[in-house]
Structures are given as structure tokens and as C-alpha cells.
Length: 210
Image (cartoon, rainbow, N blue to C red; front, side):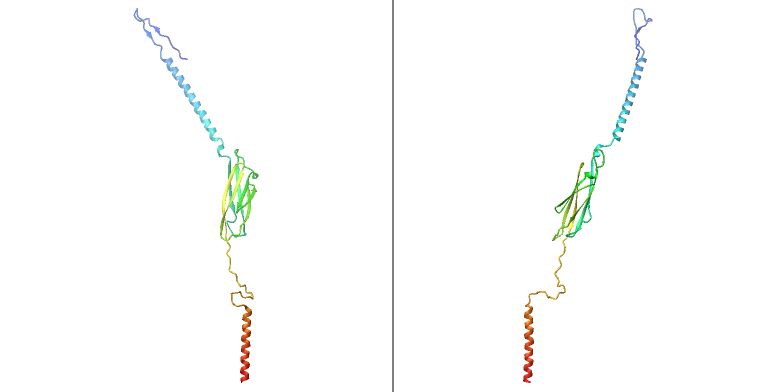
């Protein structure tokens, strides 16, 4: 603690008068130096504590990154003919809020195409569909939805069904001629018989006359 010296009376002053003398300034200077040293130590401790807190916060895992869910869907054929079959395959993965991977049984799939709905379970699931009969080419959207404890994931894929071309009918090399709207066959036969009979009559008449 600083020491203060009381003011003293100088005896060498003339009689009848008193002179006061201040205490030396060494005590006040020492007090200032001690206070500055304490403040520096306190500042160093505060800086060290702040650095340690930032280090702990920087290395701790971020909870905002979880949970997480990803999924994808693919088809083995995107262009099919009526009656053809194609297969859609879905794949999913995810982690919960504690960064634990979800088991395969946690994923539920719903595949829908052309009004047909099929349900599957598993991290990897497949469903097959048959293309309908169409007169004109159609593009039908496949919708695949995956549901899990951490959320839903939906994907869409377009599948085109081509219309089959119709060929013109052919005679096929058969013995019957196609009906073209002409006279009936028995009329043709009767005409040929009459023609032959008439020719025979003419030849017989010429022989008698000769």
C-alpha cells in the first residue's frame, strides 16, 4: 500500500511563520505502476478465456447440418412400345439429428406411373410397369416418393410410349381374289359357257352348209 508522509513544519523558517512541505511523490507513482500491472494481467486472462471459447465452438459439430436425406431414381428404359415393361429403381440414404445413418428399413417408397401405384421398402427399391396401348405417342411421368423419419424426397422421370404403325392388309398369296366390287364369279362362268356354246353352233352350221 502507498505510504503518505504528513506535512512537517520546518524549523528553519523565521520565527513567527510556518512553512508546509508536501510528502514526496514516490508513493503515488508506485501505486500507479501496481495498478497498471494488475490491469495488464486481467486483460491477458480475458483474451485467453475468449480464445479458448472460440476454439471450443469452432471444433464442436454443427447441429444445423443434420438431419439429412438424399435420393435418386432411374429407369432402365425411357422409350417403350405398347405392352413393353420397364423398371424404375430408387436409392436413398440419410442421417438423423445425431449424425447416425438411417437403417434400410426406415425408407418407404411409392412409385406411380399411368395411374398404377406400387409401394416398396428399403434403401434400394425397384418397381416394374407395363406400357399401355396407345394410338398416338404419349409421354407419361413417373413419380417416385421416398419417406423416412428425417423427411421426404420426390423425383420425376418422363417415360414415352410410342404408337405402333398399322400396315395395309395384303392378299397373302391365297387362292381367293379380293372383292373389288365387280360382277359375281358365277356370272363370269356363265358368260364363258354361253360364248363357247355359241362358237360351237357357228362351226356346226358352216359344216352343214359346206
